[in-house]
Length: 265
Ligand SMILES: [Zn+2]
Ligand SMILES: [Zn+2]
Image (tube, rainbow, N blue to C red; front, side, top):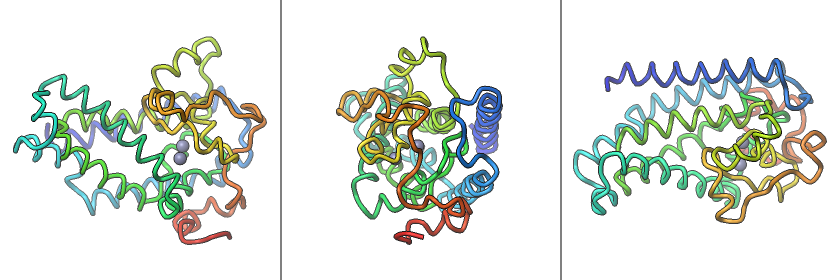
């Protein structure tokens, strides 16, 4: 696959999912937004632009490039175990999902890492743009962790590409202000993390913030006891965000970038 095609495939796919979710939440919003789009979108989308530039400038080869090198040299656990072809691709996607689940739990429990990650949680509303709002330092750190996992396991490049495209899409989907039909949602959350399931993770209540860590696959939360069906205050009444950074001015891009280094306002 040529690098040009790969970039076009990623960008085109992400833009299409973003547009679909944006339209869906405009026509059928799940919750009434408290501060709305206007104060938040410039900051959230500005962060996305900074993240894209930071990754392209600092780690241009990224995880797919590392996977190509690792596979060509036969590095990693998968080749050692004889996992090849499609088995390695499926195992690679599932294993990377487990890695980011564990990473997410660690980012909540190690204070220095929580400072980076809490900027994602400080969003006062949940919508498609929350799904791309991650501090650039968190993005670079997760990329380094993903690259280490790819080399250690010997994940094929195609699995890395599938995983990254999937993660972008599901992150935008499960942060969107949309609701799956009530009959379908309880079934869907056995297969994929749904917006209603991830909403619990954005509760202001710490015990709820520390639940439903999954991004793609919902199984890890159920397996490791971090699953919560719904927020105590109810889906409509619950407060989104954190006890700190509740000022709308905290949605501005400079404030978002400096939040990890500030204790309050
Ligand atoms: Zn989190
Ligand atoms: Zn989230």
